[in-house]
Length: 248
Length: 256
Ligand SMILES: Nc1ncnc2c1ncn2[C@@H]1O[C@H](COP(=O)(O)OP(=O)(O)OP(=O)(O)O)[C@@H](O)[C@H]1O
Ligand SMILES: [Mg+2]
Image 1 (cartoon, rainbow over the protein chains, first blue to last red):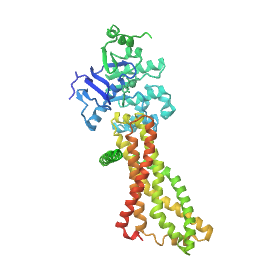
Image 2: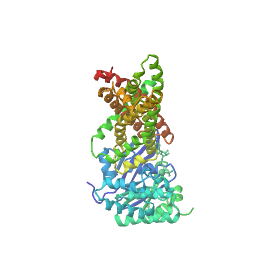
Image 3: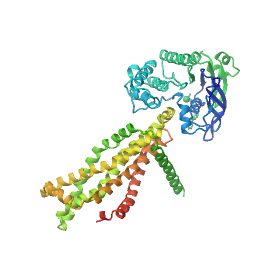
Image 4: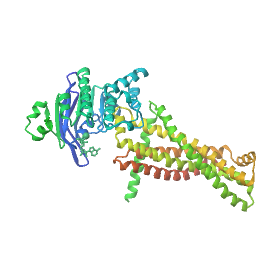
């Protein structure tokens, strides 16, 4: 169904409203397979909404959202569930299951969505948690973790199923520079090793420049600009230049 | 007018929610582990509350009926009256209301919190059916746990009653039991106990509905919890009226 040259994610004139407030207004762009796109923008401009549209948690009023060529807007629950199997999603709030330990947070999708043996699942959980630096916290409950640790745990859960598309809402927020760049290394590794398509919402320009092949800037629900960092640096719009510039 | 409209809207939504639950419940996969987890949560953890309340109500009730029956010289009827009132009505109804308070508030708040903190979205994002994982196990657990809790309530109540009788009239246990069960047949015991499965259904359905469908930030959690308790308690009492009528109709024996 999906050819190899097809973009992994496509937005075609997507408009999203909450009540009579337009949160996204006629947004179109495409993310190529294996590419990393970083979405920048001021607070409240619809970045998280954009990510949620990509996984069908929200439905647009107008336009099409295509994942590997398939329009997911009108899919029923079963169809949506098939699409979601290919996607890992990190929520801005991490959204860990707070009555489950870290281990169980990762085990839940692994045990249900794969046919792997208990030992295999065990070693995947350990390896994924090691990747995000939480190997020793495996049996802790989410309430015992710091904000940054929760974020990393959420990322581990998103990666546990080895998705071909990773959608991450502010993976570096609440992290110090060193840990933050470790997370960037991890994301870079995914892209190089596994050809994972990555869409990241972030406020961390340094990280975005390292990990992202291209950047997109959202403002008040409109896509102001999309392109390589160097292009956006010389963009005519001042806000775009300010958001993309590394200088504080 | 507005009240009627809101009432109809609410009924419709709960109806849809219930039919969704039934459709989902009969399709595999079955969340057996989650069901056991919830039975522990709903049943086992409510047991202390149910036992303590049953015992206390048994004590008080015996003291009251005792003084009334003494006036008519019907002292020997005390254990019978006690057991009949417990098996028929007091056990089922109080167990239902207690569980509505404890479990209804718990389920309402827990699911609402999961909704508000995006945990339900996270389950969906993992392409797991959140309805199956969260709602149906709670529903089944409530339906299974309530009749069992009711039996414990009955036993605790009779124990309380016996202790009062014993301390006042030195009635022996075998004699107490003989009198207590002289009028209790299967028809007086089984239908009222099983009707609490309906109470369980009400508690599970209403509190899951308020929790799962909440859509207003943190304040929604408190509201979902309160609504769960208020509406499920109310519906338990209303349905009890209908169920008692239905039981009398179907089992004329039990209407002595
Ligand atoms: N479920 C919802 N119901 C109503 N309004 C919503 C909902 N989700 C988001 N919004 C509104 O949509 C707008 C965009 O929200 P969004 O979460 O996408 O912002 P954001 O760009 O991610 O901001 P931040 O950088 O602060 O996370 C906000 O004004 C918000 O109030
Ligand atoms: Mg956001």
